[in-house]
Length: 260
Image (cartoon, rainbow, N blue to C red):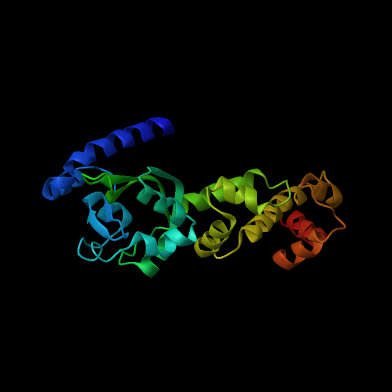
């Protein structure tokens, strides 16, 4: 699939070359494409941007971007470590940038983009040169294939689902974040923002809820209830339980049995 996309983009690059001399026609052509396209001069300054780029990336207007934005000075490109790759296009090479995951807060911070409820825009980007009659690079094109726009809620739900499925196992932030398709830092920050607690706190709370269920089963000893939850009755979780619930596990059992 990925190779097919790259072949299509190479064909697109070949079709752009004859349009270089007719700027008006070139602008009309790129505006008709459903995915974001930008054209830059060799110094990195944006010269054209299509409607899809305005809408999907959140650029407020053509006037606020063209002639102002410079890809070689973009803090996000630099921060993500793609600058050297982008510069290869000036040598006449076609460059493929995979998994370009731009934090939307950074786009708002550095550029004139619309403030939306978006966390990250994940895309693959193809950059290819446009040559003049002498075979020199005159402009270069960047085509964005938007793979995913992370808005937060779905990713948090995936993380919660992973925790609730793997609650018997030791907590693993890396694996939980991976299940949410985010980095550990992104996931932890996003989770706290949407839930008010850390992923580890959610894991502990969920584990306690399961332990409560086991403690209500009087066929199990308290130690067995802990064991069913893969916990050591003599471990620190006893103190954690009392801190969270307000009473010890044995007191909790007595309370629930009396109320039945």
